Length: 172
Image 1 (tube, rainbow, N blue to C red):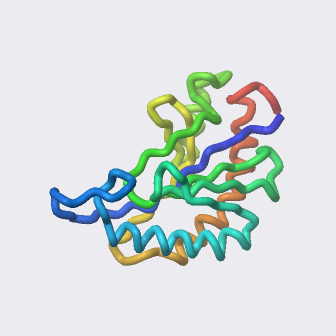
Image 2 (cartoon, rainbow, N blue to C red; image 1 turned 120 degrees about the vertical axis):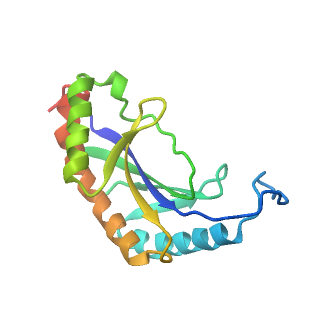
């Protein structure tokens, strides 16, 4: 059995908005700048990510989130689940859990080492579910070229998961 991995990519940006604004249908204040970035992300995912064999859809619950999967070109994973978040939204997932690992201390140490050497960084949410992250800042505009490099690099995480397997469930 191969592992399932949650990979979270964040497009983070800071917007100064008035404190009192009308709320939209999702209960969130309207945010034209964030909406514009979401549409840029959608365009990149629709064109470039599709060329890489990734499929994405906009979340119904979180209008600034896109969920996606990569299932081709993988050796150690059945699929890599990808969450692209525009803004400072939290991601949730229950795939590799640090507390449920065969050797949580060694797994945590290995992830810290990978953070030093890797393009992405590993983190855990409040439930100790692990995910690999990459953050963007939009201070200089939408980073389409960088976003494409990150999307293209996602397939490389399959090999990383392969090296973690003995620490996760004892398989080789």
